[in-house]
Length: 183
Ligand SMILES: O=CN(O)C[C@@H](CC1CCCC1)C(=O)N1NCCC[C@H]1C(=O)Nc1ccccn1
Ligand code: NI
Image (tube, rainbow, N blue to C red; front, side, top):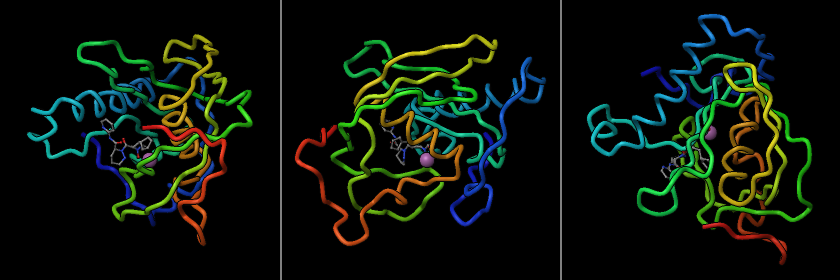
């Protein structure tokens, strides 16, 4: 398990570099490591065994690598359902986004930010995401609600943005009346 870099390390505030295709052996291993972290951390047994914080996404800068790559593993909503979105997203770009905002009712955290930062993190409720997978295949898909929030959180990391950058300093729990609140 790679160590997770904490807030304060400049790598978390850099614009990450585009990934070149075909993937080098090193980048293939990075993709594996990023997804393995999520799989292991979401398994209660292994999560405890390795003392990990369960995660639904992990961006390369969080393991000290300033490259445009992140893993996303959105847990199934009901028992043994299928994950709404699971992939390693490479050179991701949000090509369109809803005007309507969405935010997690519980606010957000980050594996690279040890402190709790209360407040709504206003994002787009729906996005159209374009990315390349580890095989260099291009994907374009529409995501909404929780999967869309997770992807926006990860893509922010690739641009040196952390979740609390979006929280309103004066009124952390402000919300516009048509903001979708996501549980
Ligand atoms: O950049 C990536 N990160 O910083 C890991 C973050 C990514 C999520 C934060 C908000 C949207 C994406 C992450 O996963 N968390 N944030 C801190 C501790 C909790 C953990 C989490 O939400 N865990 C979880 C949630 C549901 C089911 C299972 N586990
Ligand atoms: Ni994060």
